[in-house]
Image 1 (tube, rainbow, N blue to C red):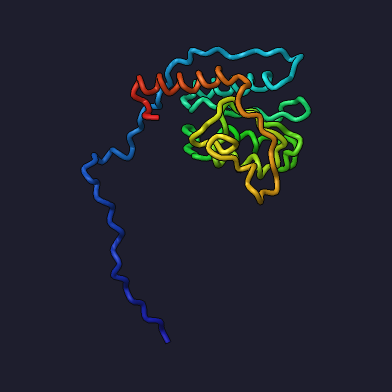
Image 2 (cartoon, rainbow, N blue to C red; image 1 turned 60 degrees about the vertical axis):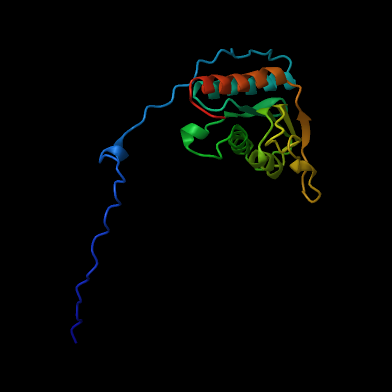
Length: 205
């Protein structure tokens, strides 16, 4: 018995209306934003004294690198036993990734460097208090300690707006050094970035 073939009546899916845009609109490439000139210089701390100021200085330098790439200037460093195992800064704009915060990238780097997702003997240094996402990551990665320069009373979740480490049922608590270490320098870096961006019409933050 021969199978009977029925010709379909479906039509090719019509292209969506242009909504008034020219045909070449989807192919237009907008110029990359130009960051305002960074008036801050990198720091060169002595390698002989590897204290909180030393590691925060390196995080500050990462924040300057973020500024020069037109990213929100937040930098992060992770150390273990006095040695750096990760360095990162925000790459949200370049990566088109809302999770590409300095802390998230550094935690991933550190886990790869030591070959273990548990960063139990590591300290994370970051120029601004971690947001809810990054604060949660510091707990999930079992970091020993977090040291941040600038408290964030709006979105910070390690003491600013709230403290995830103090939740009653969390199975890990992180030691926190809140503010004080290069706080004025890191605060001025952030404020200057947004001030200059607003003056140039580049952000409403």
